[in-house]
Amino acid sequence: MELFKLDGKVALITGATSGIGSRQAIALSNAGAKVILLGRREKRLKSLCEELQADGKEADYIVADLGDESTWDRVVAESLCLHGQVDILCNTAGVNLRQSAEAVTLESWDKTLKLNLKAPFFLGQKLVPNMRERGWGRIINVASLQSERAFANGIAYGASKGGVAQLTRAMAEAWSSQGINCNAIAPGFFPTELTQPVFDEPELADKLAQQTAIGRNGELSDLDGTCIFLASPASNYITGQVIYIDGGFTAK
Image 1 (cartoon, rainbow, N blue to C red):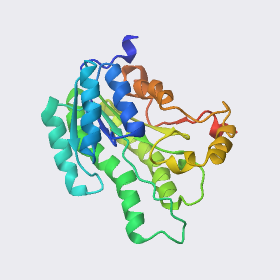
Image 2 (tube, helix red, strand yellow):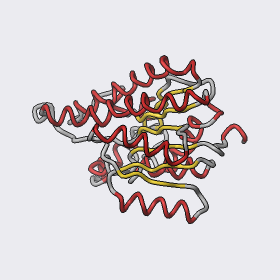
Image 3 (cartoon, rainbow, N blue to C red):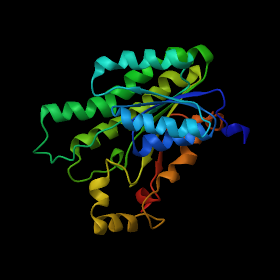
Image 4 (spheres, one colour):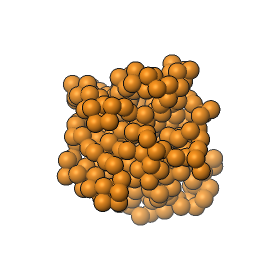
């Protein structure tokens, strides 16, 4: 089990106010990491931070809107100021505006690609020098089923998540030789804010569950193992991969 321990590691999780980001913070802290929660909604960040601290975990939070690229340098500086290092970067913040192709505007396209694709690269780029100093780092991006296939009203989101899959490979090529591995998870349908419109329609949610090989939609706890694995020494020889956590949705 030593392979999966994260004692002494510091993880920065973007989009930590809810859903997958919150779950990653819980999983990584349970594995021993100090976690830095990043998001726009301070009340939610503070609540999760206090919950983790009450359980004996070391947690801090930073309030920032990554949709505003002028905040990125501050986020990096404040993160490094807290512990002097960031070993694990979880690029989990994202947006899905669910617009038809005809409804997409220049503004909505740019908003989607900035948060889903541009921010993960530049946050990684800015944190790599600190990781390089120790010869060890992990970057975990969040891809999607739409990295591989198209869904209705998802043209900008799908383009951004297709980009995340290739970005992950390119980041791995650039930095893995320096000890900084980069992989991505591609979740299926999990109950989060982004997928709430799906779960608001029980018939649709059930239809999607039946499209999986396992026969159900995901529960957030199903993400824990892969997150800890990709963040830990257990994944030392794995980089540039997109791992689908989808109950076999893409297998059928």
